[in-house]
Image (cartoon, rainbow, N blue to C red; front, side):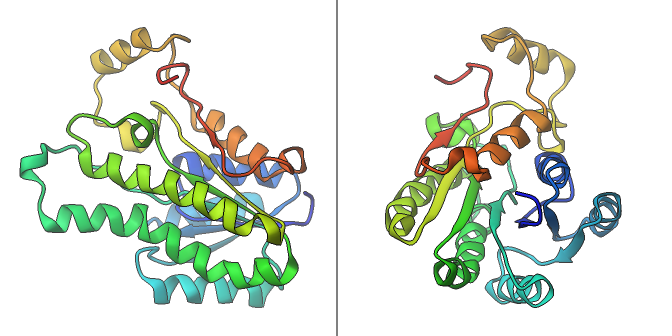
Length: 240
């Protein structure tokens, strides 16, 4: 994988940052997409010798510009990790149109925009690795997280269908569906709630961003050359 170019959306923090570090360890040239976390993204880029690029993934124009800039700079893109995501806990009856559209705009439209922009390059080269990031709630649904669960279920459906479509072009499309991970997205959970989740998890622990990054890296690596359309779920056995 040395020398390959990997673009990670939402790459400035949490799972995205851990994935960026994992790919950099292999000698990949890492492009870190961010929307608002400029300082963190640029600091990570300096640390890894990578490149930080701003784009709101819900905006197709910005995403196309980002992909064009990556190809102008590196003349290639080998791996696309669609990691950018937002979450919200709310009763279904309290969801507004703006809530629903905002979550789908990032979690689903963002994946669509990034893959659509990168696809002509992948198809032209007859190769490429696409890894999407869903959630265990996309597999089983979470109470008070209907919009989030629905958006992450859509990512799984997109992954499976696209894998069938792109297989003849030599492109793999796989998904990682994390369980409870120690990231900013779960910072609203207090220690009592986290302890309850540990006890509910067969492996008795909360996952780390590095646990998820290892799965993303595997699916993008030569070791996964014959794997496509699959969902790898680092969740400690919470969902089986």
